[in-house]
Image (cartoon, rainbow, N blue to C red; front, side, top):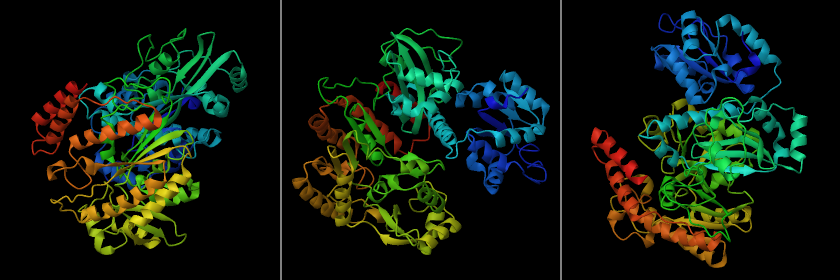
Length: 616
């Protein structure tokens, strides 16, 4: 029997189920389930595919139907479906009891049920009933938060597969967990968690919303909710606890946190209170110490802080990937990281760290955000979110090296601006379109076509890149908008030429940097909240560069971390411990392997495995 109210995921077969016809034998004749998938998503129910088909052909058909972005964790090949569905549920952290698998072949249904006991299975004749249920449900997720969260989880799972061991992967995720006490403001989400969590619900007490409200206002009960974010995205509210007289009444977490150690971290933060576990949970908590990879940039060293001052200061580190290299040599507590990341279209999102974008993106209304996502295939929903303007941020570490790279485009209708792509190859110039389509210039992994480039050019005009004075004006504006007591630390680009440059975008970049840096130093003389770190202090030879004027050898970042360590101490009262020179040595070796001609052979993978073992 299908319990529709328990469904969190629908897994679709394709041929003669999602669409009519067999893709490999005459093609698709008709597809009447596109609207249903969209309605399921609007109600917070996730959709996935398990099909015996040619992957490329199936994905192309889904693209033609305009529905491919509504599916996650797809499994499309010719192997048996039972083991594949079992693996899908494990990767997604879902119980079989909350999943419906729809297939026209009873053999596939029985096989899936055998591998995943409790799985709800049905033939396509269930679809009218499912459609009726969805049309009547009141639970809505119009912004597709759950879908986006599972897209983040999918990217995370794909990244996990690149690591030789799980511990190294966990240290790389920069997982940040926070406990909040304003539970009444989030009572709807907390009540949903209480009713719907199972695998990581240790207490399993299902209560009404009125009972929850009474619990939250009870002065004898201490309660809190848990948020999680990492380098892959923000997971939002994923946990809740309530405790009375050192005994947990409620202790529960979303399945999206499975495998991250979040529940153990929270349990240790609460001081290991009494906990009576009801039923089965997938990850028991113990009196062991908190996982070291949580709230650490690098989990293999302890962070030294001044216990009397500054250890609650929140720090934002925002910029391109080379900034992530610099801070990897320091353990910074209470830090938020906004680096280049992989977007929902598997593209690289770096332009959110350009001043034109971060000064406008967070303040756009929903209609303007959706318009940017529609107009620009290179945009991503997550790019609108930043901690830059949070009132509790005390220190912002920002790179000045993104702005000189990108071109600025102005909307023809409302004069709004957006920065993207190397300034010397305007997206609006048809002469450059073959370069983008053929990926002969920096595309940030976007799949440009003449159609989407023309659509962009019809709506935007190219206005050039920021001048040095315009960049300084943006920094002044940023200082006015951030927390009035926050310090802004800028990393300055090199003023020394990189003689081996072969890239048009970096021609005479040192001259641009000289002008910007001079204006920033002038501003810093009158603006005490502005701190500067110059890479030129550590660049002595051409060999100190890596492959362009913005990228340096590891020892340059290692030395620059000394300046940053000093600012952390002065501004936030944090004595961050610096990594050892032995790790720098290992990083230098890894870097040489990464850029060597042998990087695709077995020696490279063996060396990478040894590197992670030694570093950990």
